Amino acid sequence: MEDIRFLLVDDRADVRAALRRLISTWPGGNVVAEAENGEDALRLVALHRPHIVFMDIVMPVMDGFQAAEQMKTLYPDLRIVLYTGHSKKRFQQRARDVGIDAVYMKEELTLSEFQRLLSQWFNTSPQM
Image 1: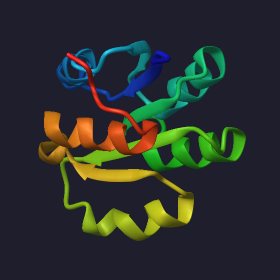
Image 2: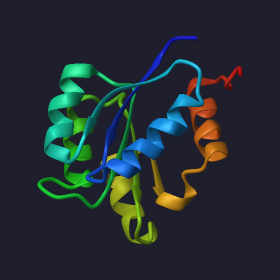
Image 3: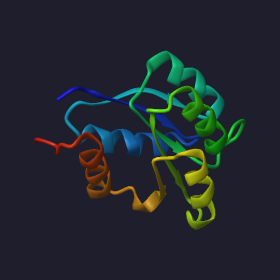
Image 4: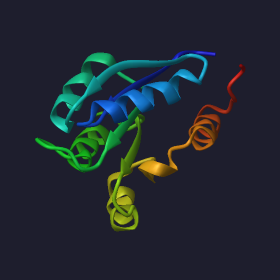
């Protein structure tokens, strides 16, 4: 199976560390870069060409939606997963409008949900 490249975008280092642990459970999962805001993420997407971006919605400098909108324009095949500590209901319509691939509340990003999502997208399952 081909490596799956991830970009993690969150202003909190502890959340990025938790996502790194989650990704490490997927064979071939490779975090190629991390950013603290959407502006840095845009630069890193161009540099590292990840397959998937996991990005917080609420961040300083440039929020997740602003960054995602630009990313989807430049890289329409890029998978973007937005997450929030707030109610996701208030973000779902905008996410559909922008073409976001998935929206989660932070507590919904469990190991089983992560593996389900990647299995669906890449038509495979982790071989441990």
